[in-house]
Length: 375
Image (cartoon, rainbow, N blue to C red; front, side, top):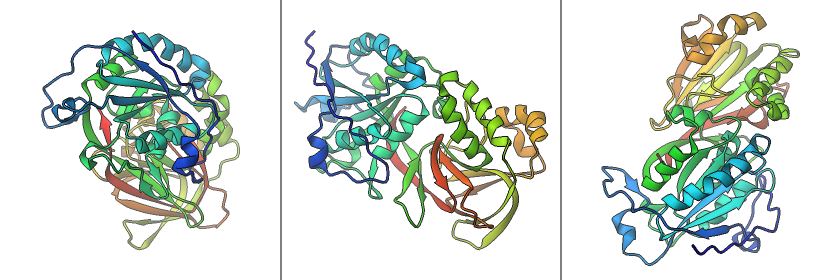
């Protein structure tokens, strides 16, 4: 087996609200390549498109799959598991493919890598890690409010998103019914079946849009996530620690919302408001149980006037998704929702996919079928 390696040398850290030109990114190599042999791809594609379709088989261009790995994820476990997975990955992929490994060097680096990979015409960018890595890769599919593209490719064969869940939390994978077996994830990538998934966009008057694929949330749950990020070394226990710390300074707040561009509605004593493109967050809590990342709309769940003891008494309902029957829980469908803090305090936390984004006000919009995903 012949392997050629080109190792990233720069830090390449980019904020989602920053802009970077193709020329400046090209000056910073981002790939580690390993050419490999594998079994033949499946020919039964049904109605889905595949990375290994007949339309590509006649092309002399070697298909390029970019694996974006956070080696420090899950206290370094992601990097160790990835090294163990690589031989199996190489054995399973087609001999005409290029395995392009890119190790992130810090926050937002995965965004930079993904944008450059798409511009260079990669067939797929695969997030290797937890929901945080997936979140950054999804944001890399967009720039300045528009999808990143390679103008030489047919739009029907745009770069696909893939996922190998190896991190602390894999809540989006739960919605798809996947377990955390990385070999099963590799097998899905080998088959290469594509379906369209929705993406959420978050906007404000002062910042560029930010994107999420799983769940965005506001107030207590967002504050808990903000604190939980400090305790990732404790695994899923970080969510419990974050929630306890958030409760210490929590007060329910009056918000107002505008759904689908309608009239403003009062929403009193909000404990948490969650906007689901998918079902789970916080390490397995089924917070938006009817959300579907392929149906073109959000499920919005609002918890009102919860006390600390309500979470203890109803925690099992939040985890199994039966909390919608609780009297002070409201669920509704939406294509867009604007949310403001009535008091104007500017201290109501906002996060998406577990990543802290600042404070209200914000507007959330669904982008139907925005990305092709390997499923």
